Image (cartoon, rainbow, N blue to C red; front, side):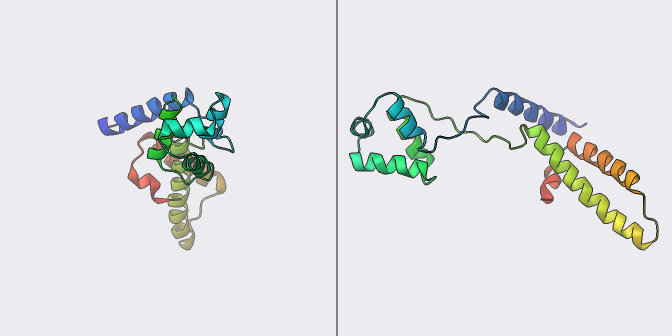
Length: 156
């Protein structure tokens, strides 16, 4: 494996460890974090607005915007500061880890590549059995996952 691929693999492992210790399993409250934290600590809307330096109506609109996914990170960061909190922003892979994401994408790409070759072979009456195809896909997927690059993301 070349140095660039090794470095990329190391970064994936480091991010996976970080995400494993993070908020990966925490769901956003329906009312949003701002409202959830504010009410949990007993802060009124008026007190929150004063800390933000805005009207009570604007503070309520901010809470509504967060709950409706219409808030900017800058506004969310200001709200967090007003609540004496720190905003944490992260992307959490749906597959559980970046490594699992790469392996899944490698399998999709390998399936596409092997299928394209198999179509040509079928036209030449050289079709392989399903076990041989499965092994070829596994081999190609492992190869692609071992040294992922931008070509991996052309499929799906």
